[in-house]
Amino acid sequence: MSDQPVIIKKISWAELCPWTIIFRTLPVAVSVTVLALAMVGVLAASFTWWLSENLFVHGELEQDAAMAEVVRLNTSPYRSVFVDARTDTNALSILGARLSGPRAVFNQIKRPATYIFASKVKPTAVGGQNVRLGTSGFLYFLFGTVCSMAIWSFVGLAIARVCLLRLTRNETIGIDDAFDFAFDHWLASFGGVSIPLVAALALCIPASLIGLLMTFDLGAAIVSLLWPLVLALGGAMALLLLGLTYAWPLIVSSAACEGQNSFDAMTRAYAYVFQRPLHCLGYAVAAMLFGGFCWLIVANLSGSVINLSYWASSWGANVGSGEQPRIEVLQGLASDTETSSESMLSFAQNTIAFWNGLIRTIAAAFLYGLFWCMASAVYLLLRKDVDDTEMDEIFIVDEKRTYELPPLKSDETGVPQVQTPTPSDAPEETETGETESS
Image (cartoon, rainbow, N blue to C red; front, top):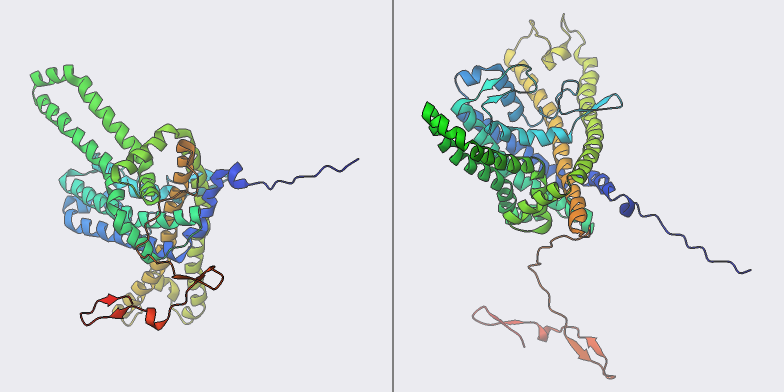
């Protein structure tokens, strides 16, 4: 009896479970390139919100506690993602642990844009208090939102490009190459996100003109007959904003992957969301769970670095301290009535707070970088589901530098051989500065 050959086939988890590509984004997110790009985005976005605050938040709006909480979260590079998970509405409860992270980044970038279409603001950190925006509040959120969109359309595009090249071709590029690509395709990314917003605002114009008739009773009666038209305008705006709510990270990823124009990036992302909503939801849940566990580790690690530094320093700092432990005074948890120099103590407290804030900002930059990396992975998965495009296909920029083939010369047997260039074969420079070959 002859032995039958046994064929052992290796299991390809990438083919059986393509969504595991989301797990491959973690090494990219912790790379120096992505962390540096994310730091640029986090700091630049915080600066624009600080600028918007100084331009538009004044008077009664500045004194409002709820608005002050919103402004504080927007101007800080890390506070919005370091909200206590016990009170954070972005956190998911899994096996007794509350996971936040990617959802916090998603809402932090998206939430200010929703305030543009609202007359009141109800921040999550201040329960039960609403803020009437008015013109100043509207301009604050409009200016900050547009600037944030511009920043993250650029930085997110650069991060997505770095991640997509790693996931598709296993290639690594530096910060300079990522910036070059972002400079060349930034308008496609920013325009793709802006088109739905501009279209929604344009649909408000006819609705507002119809609303002018509602200022008197006869006009209101006429508008009541035309109300289906207003509902149609509202439905169109709802579809545009609903798609944008879930498609805006995919628009940036599409521009990074395909190198296309704004309209193509927007329509492709919208098509993926509306044609495969359940797939999109499943990938989003997987990304939130994975990113939530990653953020749980990084957030606790950054907190441990700060707390252990205080704890180790307290061994010496508390020696000979009075009623209040010296380390608590430096932390700002207690006041020191026996200090000899208020200015030096304030300098020490502010400097320590700066370094602690830097640690938290680096942790926040990791979370933002991970968010854009996972958005790129989700884009590849949806593109595979809808267009049946291979996961390793990506737009490659044409190389600017070209090389000529080396000269060939036949030997005695007639076989072509690479000719070694001699000094006489090198281009000679003429008196006019031009080169000519021999």
